[in-house]
Image 1 (cartoon, rainbow, N blue to C red):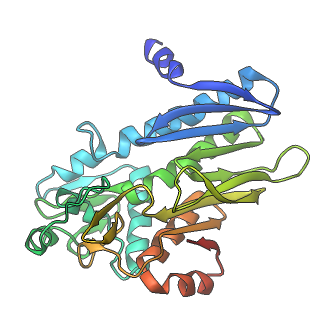
Image 2 (cartoon, one colour; image 1 turned 45 degrees about the vertical axis):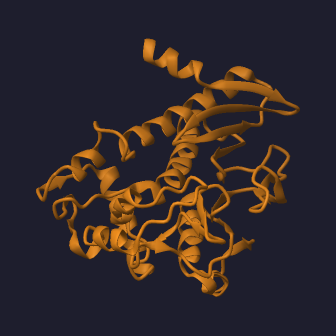
Amino acid sequence: MLAERVETSLIDVARASDHFIGRFTAMACPCEVLVETRDESLARRVAQIAAQCAWRVESKFSRYRKDNIVHRINTANGAAVTVDEETANLLDFADALTRISGGRFDITSGVLRRAWTFDGGDRVPSPATIDELRQYVGWDKVRWSRPELQMQPQMQIDFGGIGKEYAVDAAARLIEEEMGEVSCVVNFGGDVVVRHPRKDGSPWRVGIEAAAAPGSALGIIGLRQGGLATSGDSRRFVFAHGQRYSHILDALTGWPVTGAVRSITVAAGTCTQAGALSTLAFLKGAQARSFLEDHGARFWLQ
């Protein structure tokens, strides 16, 4: 009970015209849930469900913890690890994205973060450093036979490229399971999902952040149902020698994607789908637009 009270104290709920906004922090980003209701207790419960879901996903899949399945996989030293169903589903999804991207998306590429620090500074690693780390990158070096995963020693996985969007959809689904049909917006660091329109049938108004001016909106779109996700370099990058390096790395080279736009926002049926499309498009570099058009996506490039 004490832990539950502490978690609840980290959630702020405030009235905003005809809805409430619940705010908290998870996965190193600001999160919020907009709930169309005049019942503050209902809004608090919805926010609590979303927050606890986000914290659970973060706790289970963060590569920074030493008490979860990711740590167990990353420290297995070549031994096979049997994973639970939820982890297996994420591994299957990551496997599919790797195949679709031709290997440019790869959850084993997280080891490259040892060389790259996307903090807005000017530090660029040497080609030799990247080449040294690339020997530990490659989903083709992994044996994945559900539910067993076996990696070579010193290889690691990182769910950072898909975890936040997954958490958004999981939170929205859990809200509906526990509370029924609630008109709300779940927004974790700009990754958004809406499962129902507003009570009068109108869409929720969701802003697309301007890449050139983080914190301001490029435009407003209406969402009655579906997800929205953005991939880009507006907040995480390296700037050196007149060049901006995006935090989205091409796993085949170990270097940031070249020829890409600043930001890609995609709307899709779920936040997970939107995130996958925006990331895969970004990895296409200059071919991002044609990739999204070929997939019939609703998108915004900056």
